[in-house]
Amino acid sequence: MIPIVIESFCNEFVGFVRVTDQDGAEGWGQVSTYHADITCQVLHRQVAPWVLGQDTTDLDDLVDLVTEREHKFPGSYLRRAIAGFDTAIWDLRAKRAGCPVAELLGGHAGTIRAYASSMKRDITPKQEADRLKKLAIDKGFTAFKVRAGAEVGRGEDEWPGRTEEIIPTMREVLGPNVDLLIDANSCYAPARAIDVGRMLEDHGFCHFEEPCPYWELEQTKQVTDALSIEVTGGEQDCDLSIWKRMIDMGAVNIVQPDICYLGGIARTLRVCRMAEAAGLKVTPHCANLSMVTLFTMHLLRAIPNAGNYLEFSIEGADYYPWQESLFVENPYRIEDGHAQVSDRPGWGVEIAPEWLAKAQYQCSKADSQA
Image (cartoon, rainbow, N blue to C red):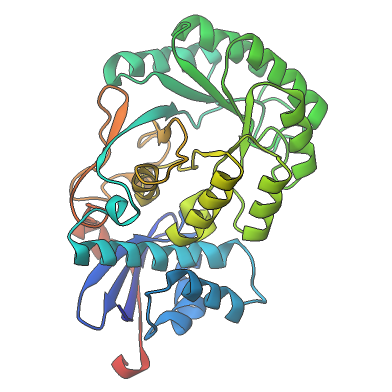
């Protein structure tokens, strides 16, 4: 396959990408959410020039070529833009093969256990537990994630005592038979993180996410070494050398790459293989209901070291108004606490024409198509 046209459709929050190859076949993907309009500029200016007209058979090599040609820009925006191209190529490949992406990756369609992922801190522990209990009844969730501390909070809580209250409240309200996870979003120094971790262990939590500033791997390792609860992280990291160091040093027990932050499926598979070699599971970050959760569903149905759950955001229009009406048909339905990867070709989803018609549009073409 040789891509000759790359189109983007975006607003500030989300950007979809369509790639057309030399035979007229199309694939759809997505750049990472947030500042997606900036990311789409990067896609057309710094990714398209290196991939248009090029053979995509060795996608790993091609995305590496982009990072080498743009070596002065090694940061997140370039990877977020590459993700739009990469995920569109996987869709195109799978549609040509007449199968879901999961099958191209070595897996197949089917169900995945999901955890209900709360994004909120502006909610009392009792209110949080009550709304999650309702989801357990209505949707069959048996695993839940809530928030500790304040986001990158320099040790401060969202309000005094909230963390100490939410930990026992979740267990008391939701009962002894559910899995409880918690995310500190880079809040704590190691000593405080270890104290919180011991509270979590006392109440049977099983997952302690990003306890320390994510860029301080040595701090996170102190927490991992001190606790029996599984310490997790990695969602923010887009540099493969950092991933190698994180895994080699044992900074975390479970790795959490975000497919769109990292630069797409091909690069995420490299992290999955690093983790597999180290005996670590992969529970990716996918904190909204754009296409990133769909990408993650297909990945988890294929990799041998998939973690126990799919992250599944429970926030609707009140929290993420921009994620409404993205698709012709909603690909996200939870039944008995599980999500379903369909057997439709590609990602198995169609972007809503009404949404596309309102989006900012850009197009890049190979020189012969200009």
